[in-house]
Length: 430
Ligand code: HEM
Image (cartoon, rainbow, N blue to C red; front, side, top):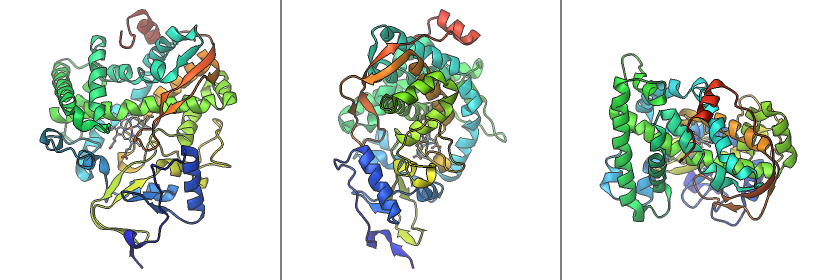
């Protein structure tokens, strides 16, 4: 028998409650053990079991709620609400499939691997100034500045423009701040500067293709179909919006988890080949994206529950990640030697058609950064208090992560490219 979700007798969870993130996910796990997969929240429903999080994210009738974000935040300015270009993040159905097909190749694991020497160089150049002192704020010194130079390198933006890029990215990301309505002028200004800059870069690359993401997106073709200039601009915007704060926050949560597990930090330094597993495990154990938003594009019946059109649900990636079916043994134990169970990958990159397009790049960024940090910051200890973002923020991580450590050796440059980069002036922000 089909029952409306609104008529079900469901446990209610309050995302603003004082429960810390471990207590919160333990609570989800208890609820799943009691047979619940759906709970009520202040603005809709949350989905908390692995199979149902995957089930809803793979069901195309549920659409990405990011498209409704400006509206949900009370933004009425037509320049923001009406003139938005179709983006891979906010489109669905055939339109999304077409965009995704055209860009997939440019975000392959091989494309990400080519940036590994640049990643190592950026991380080393961020560690260098703090290493002798044996203390650092991991967020301010490493996580914050790390992603922008990588995205600039990915796109092929010249080094002298990185500061502008950083400023634009910060303003574009401000759309997610609670104070967005006070910042609209700054956001619009940054958007139009970034658009003009990207259009210029696209025109240059059309005449003179190079070995970078923009050239590869321009060349991408499927059955005679290509991305238009507005679609290319929108892709660059999507990469900045989706690839900056996610990576820096995931790196901060990862280092905080390792600081709590010194044996695992030492193990990673000694056995850098564990880096791929370490990244999967740390993203499972404490993911920076706790959940994603979906709304029903039509009346949907799922597991005999009717979700009327426009119902909002929050598939909790954090809850899915501690589902008993995802690990052999206790999901609350952190162990980088864990082999992921086939078909039950950690969920922090999402699932279904909107699965993170930058997953290979993010994995490579985290693997390279964590190994170098583990090797060059040995005996890592938290020195003071970690300040966390509120658990309800869309992208969760630390605001401050003060640490002390014993300086370790800098690994030798590993390739010709890295040596070239080291010899040149490839320093973030400089
Ligand atoms: C650790 C870092 C990252 C995490 C945790 C992360 C997480 C996610 C998640 C959960 C989604 C799905 C959102 C949804 O279903 O509503 C997503 C989508 C996306 N991500 Fe990432 N991401 C990361 C890094 C990156 C990077 C580095 C890039 C770009 C180079 C990127 C580009 C994208 C794009 C373009 C989408 C939208 C894909 C689509 O809608 O088809 N992400 N990401």
